[in-house]
Length: 243
Image (cartoon, rainbow, N blue to C red; front, side, top):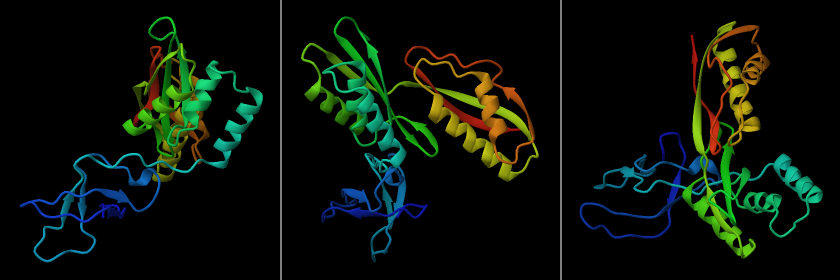
């Protein structure tokens, strides 16, 4: 059991090789909630006499993805109706990538490394914000596209380079409720609008803050200008500091 109550189940029996026992585990609850970094500490839900109850995730826990929302499914269906498959058009690569569990958005970069090369950038969006897809999600996307792409295309699937945008501001009224609302609106802004190579206008950041429930006024200390990423950089929400 993780400190926040998420539980994992061992997948097979094992035998101690003193002083440790290594086992494969899987989160009991499906979705991203079970993902964890290498080194995360767990505790045996039911302690065993003579055995240290502390457990360490050696390689982490990856690959968990939340079920697709109705809105996301509807958007993919409308996109397919509007842009039928054409055997290798830019929208085909996006459709192929989005069919992989864990991929929520995708972008295509024609001739990313020269003639006949195609770059496909993918991300995983959660309620908390934008995150890089796990390695197995990237591998699954690469494998699927390699199976259906035109034979002349050399495709590379990758996660964009994230450009954290730290925000410092003061709000009126200044209380926990308004601060949480501002944080949620900013996270939603970056999920809705952030794309690799796309400018994030400062006015949109100000607007998101103003949309926060309970916010009457605010002063934005930073950033002080539009966010200008490079071609494969993607602005993501960094640290939000209230002053």
